[in-house]
Amino acid sequence: MSGNSNSDILLAGAVAAFTVDLLVYPLDTLKTRIQSPNYAKLYTNATTQKPNPALFRGVYQGVGSVIIATLPSSGAFFTTYERTKAFFNHINPPTSSHPNGLVPTPIVHSGASSIAELVSCAILTPAEVIKQNAQMVSAGSSTNATMQTLAKFKSNPLALWRGYTALAGRNLPFTALQFPMFEKMKEMIKDHRDRTNKRTGTIFESGMITAVSAGAAGTVAAIITTPIDVVKTRIMLSAVDDAVHEVSSQQKSTRAGPDSLVDAFGKTVQSSKATAKSAVRNLNPLVSPELKGKKSAWKIGQEIVHEKGVKGLWRGGALRGVWTFVGSGLYLGVYESGRVYLASRRGEHVDEAELI
Image (cartoon, rainbow, N blue to C red; front, side):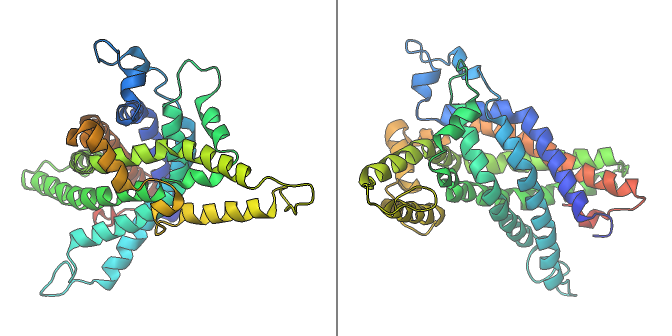
C-alpha cells in the first residue's frame, strides 16, 4: 500500500476499537444480561416480569479488559485482513474475460476477513470471557467486577480460552457476511454520488460512506448470526464454573501424600499431568465436548430451545442489531478515516482501491 504503513493500520485500528468500546459498551452489557440464563432471576421483577433497575447498573463493568485486548486484536485483524486481501488479489489478477479475476471479489473479501478473524479471536477470547462474566457481577459489590472475575480463574487461567471456537464460530460467519455486503454497498453509494455530481472526496465524506455501509451491513449480519451469539454467551458465562470445577476435581483426585513427587510449582506429578491434559483439551476444538466433560454448542442450543422455545435463540437480537449498526459504523468509519488522515499528514495519498 503506497500510502499506509503497518503502523498506520495498527494505530487506526486501535483508535477505532477504543472509540467503539467506550461508546457502545453499555449496549453490549445489556445484551449479555438479556441473553444470560439468569436474566429472569437477576434482572426482572418477579411479579410483573418487567426489567428491574439492576439491569441498567454497572453497564461499564469489565470494559478495562476489553480495551486492553481489543487494541492488539483489532490491529491484528486489520493488518491480517489488508495483507491477506492484497495477497489474494495478487494471485487472482484480472483478465480480459474476468475483470475482477477468476475468483469473485466477495469471496476474496470473505476469505481475507475470515482468516483475519481467526487471528483476532485468539487474542480476544480471554478478554471476552472476562468481560461477559464481569458484566454479570452484582453492581453493588465493593470489589471491582473485573478483579472478582480474574480471581476465579487464578487456579486455572487456561479456562480463559474456553469459548474460542464459539467466538470464532460466531465471528467467522458474521465477518464473511458483513464484509462483502459492506464493500458492495460502499461501492454503490460512491457510484451514486459520482453520477449525481455530489462527490467531494473529503475525509469526512469517505468516513461517512464507510460508516453507513458498515453499519447497515453489520446490522444484517448481526441479526442473522444472533443464535450463534446467544450460544456463545452461554458458553463464556459458564467458563467460571468450569474453571472452579476442574480445579476442585483435580485437587480431590490428586491429594499429595508425604512422599509424593512434586514439580517446580509445588503440584504433584499426577496433578501436573492432569492440568496439562486439561489444557490441551480446552485449546483443541477437535476434541469432543463430551470427553472434556462440557456441553457442546449444539447441546446448549437445544437446551435454550427447550427452555425458551425457538425465540430464545434470537434473544437480544434487536439490541445486538442496534449496537452493531453504531459499533460497526464507528469502527470502520474511524478506521478508514484514520488511515487517510495519517497518510495525508505525510503528504501521501491512499488510493481508494486500497481502502477496506
